Length: 190
Image 1 (tube, rainbow, N blue to C red):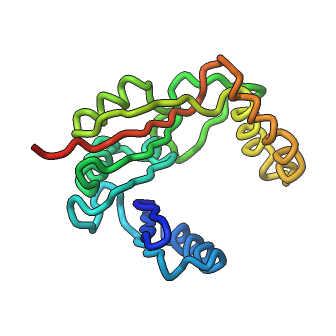
Image 2 (tube, rainbow, N blue to C red):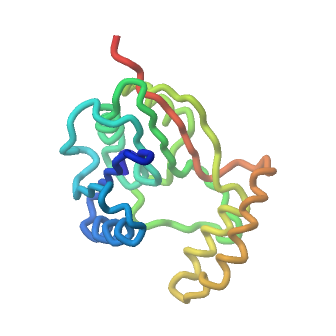
């Protein structure tokens, strides 16, 4: 997804998967916002979009799937206007699992990122960090792990609704989060 606007705003969604774009088109029709949504099948490392076009960009749990993550960040910087906002979420490295010692996600090319390394990558592409927040602490991770572990057995339909509300307790936790949320801004050209 590239931009989320308000009443007159336009939402542009980008995914390399035709299936994901198809599912997003159905969801936008069901939400009755399809007149404000434009969906594009494209590679984030080579976006068919003009420079300095968007005020806001959202990139959630994408970078860990990409071999060319630095190139993807460069493309995000290219399409963001000066002072444009980036909301970025990715897993962190050295994750602490709750019940299951190791859950691997097959299409990840890396486990995640260290906070400082990701901030340096953003800064190298003219994007400055405004705020960072760790996500998926104990209950959030437990919820996600259980959903992945039991999905094939359809038990996640029973377990997830019970465990997910507990993830709100993570707001009070000092435990290291397994996810990293970054709010950043593209520096204006001088």
